[in-house]
Amino acid sequence: MELWTDRTERLATGTTLASDAGDLLVLGSRKHQGRYLVQFDGVRDRTSAEALRGVELRAGAIHVEGAMWVHELVGAHVVTARGRDVGTVVALELNPASDLLVLASGALVPLRFVSAIEPGVKVTVDLPDGLVD
Image (cartoon, rainbow, N blue to C red):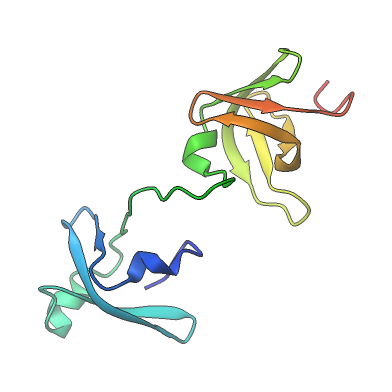
């Protein structure tokens, strides 16, 4: 399987992952050629494993001090530290210098300017003059 997170503890023995095919309990996992081989409870043969091909697995949120999560940013209202309305976050765009908040207006705000987050509600930014004008 491909892991879309750097949180490898998602595949720790005893972890339960949700999917449209039902919950799956991890019995063990190991890295193999850039992906992971994962053994799930109840998946004992190739036919059972192939039935899960393409199934997206989900895990609950993990609290990491200082981390910003996409699901906490998208839909949030963006305001400056002085209270000026900047817009609503509709997506996040990966960028080598600084990932970018994509606003409904099309404006891009580098994450380095985020000073506070109320998850899913408000993102406060400290912007240089003219960045989104």
